Length: 104
Image 1 (cartoon, helix red, strand yellow):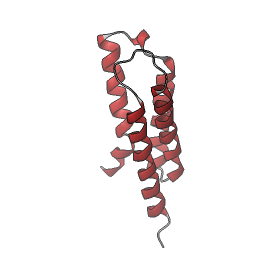
Image 2 (cartoon, rainbow, N blue to C red):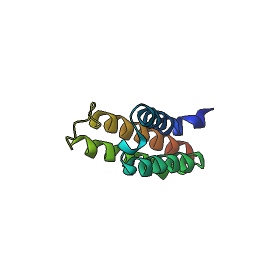
Image 3 (cartoon, rainbow, N blue to C red):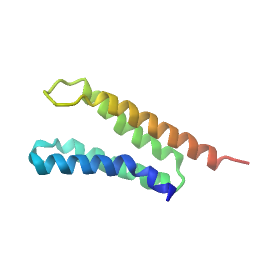
Image 4 (spheres, rainbow, N blue to C red):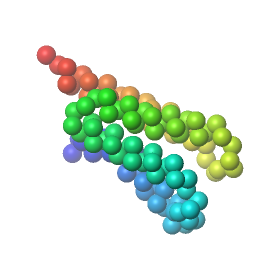
């Protein structure tokens, strides 16, 4: 059950973008977002396999959100705070997994 935490941001992000696609249109969602979701899914796969460096893909997703927050495109919410939270989340998970794998 603990391994689901590696996929939590992927699940929440996917649900959010599917909801946006249903109420607006899927063409309103930048294709770059779908690529980022694939990266986030791969991060979870790597971390389930006890590869702590899989967190770097999750951090990459967070950095992309931070950078998207700097572009003013008239969106309702600013992505920067979410990006910071995602970076911190994956940094913590990666550090925790690293500690678990390197215990003597």
